Amino acid sequence: MKLISKNKIFLMLGLALSSAQANATVIGGETAQNLDAISFTESYADGLGRYTVTNELENSLLVGFGVTNIDTTAAIHTQLPDNNYYDSVGGSGLVGENSFYYEAYTINAENWATHVLYIEESNSDNDGGGFYNPAEYTAQDLYGDIDSFFTNGENTLNWYSANDGALWGGNTWDGFVFYGAQPASSLYGILSSQGQSAPTVFANGITPTSVTTTPDATNVPAPGALALLAIGILGTVLRRRKQ
Image 1: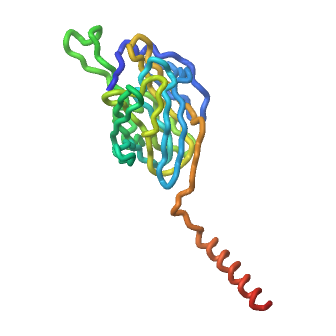
Image 2: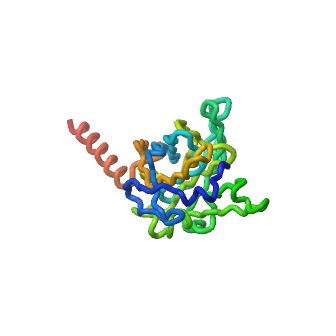
């Protein structure tokens, strides 16, 4: 995973886009600066949701991001040589020369304060003379109390962490998926400089540029609707017989 140095964590820029989500607490107490850093679309069909994510920030790495939702489960879709997909908690992608591997985590009330989403990177300037104990940050550390973070009934953060490569600036990938409900959601992301020469950017509360939903193919009319349909058909048959 491409990680971030401790010195840079506290140099975060500060300007948050407005969104339906509550303002999140960020490391060091500073607000996030989005800088049009990430854009994404959300699609849903037959029980499977998909985030198509673009890293818009030049010379950066998308080291992790999460999208809010309701009672969903995060996963990764990886394309096989035969153009089929398999999904799992982790998967790889390739865009041009940019290869990457992400792992998917479902963050909710059970692991909000315990599951590590972000780890700072050691370097020669702060390795403590040969020993380095990197700081680890949970959703509680990054975004504050869960009760003040989620709004509109949302209770899940579908989180995707880069591990062994990350999505470069200017690249797009659609392998981030989820199972469950289908509301539009907000994205929270962490981007680092490829050369670690710029501050870490925390992008909060980004809404999708488009949302496409297709009803489940298994959906059937409710019993009441079926009864009304049967009555209508019966009435038509009776009228024809009388004629």
